[in-house]
Length: 315
Image (cartoon, rainbow, N blue to C red):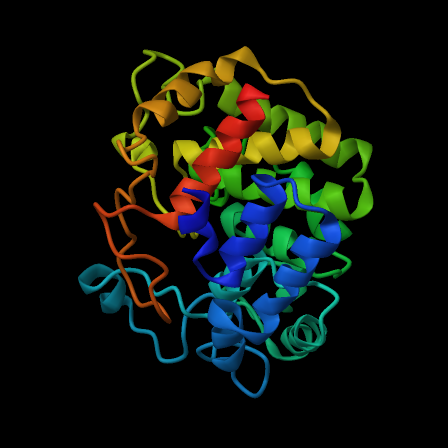
């Protein structure tokens, strides 16, 4: 199994070395550096526009027409989703490519909503959560965005990008996007009392629901939450939730919450006889290139994430 994972792109190999093999940092750091120069990472970097954006836009590609969303699916090629992917690949924030990209995006990219400067965010919590994560990871001062998101919690402790339209209940999707952003901000800066409190309340929102259940009935809130996928973009699934709690524990030393137990048991149940995990679904829409062999096939990304969650839980 480990050999299969290591026979992959540098974006996967370095994380296997760090999270599953406990390799010394100099070894996995050297492998991580290859994300800039080979494989998927280099390929994405090479697709950037001269102004540092991708596909000519912040959230949507230049020339995007709304009917594409309905007929083909949401496009995933613009700057926001590409930066998220480079962060998840592990592009070294100290690399020349990362520094150049961050500066160019800050200078040239403006949000589709109202022309806001890219690193200031726009109005939707899902978008701003990912922007916070990307900015913090790549060394941008996104503290105003972190404080703003901390103040936009709903009464139930989480977030909903429809809050601006009057929504009073949080969503799993919005909450995980903001939580990942707050955690990345905390990793980069130590966070503030406000951002740490916001992260704790968002995590409690998920924990109270066992990561996938309705609070009212205990039934799955959405069957898609049990469908394992990667990339997630802005979508939630139970493995994304578990991987967040693993990452948070790695940063803070937090103990494993027993309310994660049902989600962990479900993850175990999805393991295939050969020890891999499948890709259950793939999001519709325009992409630069695929990262797997398609739904129903073993997925290195899902398997990596599942194995490191279980390694943390069983430790």
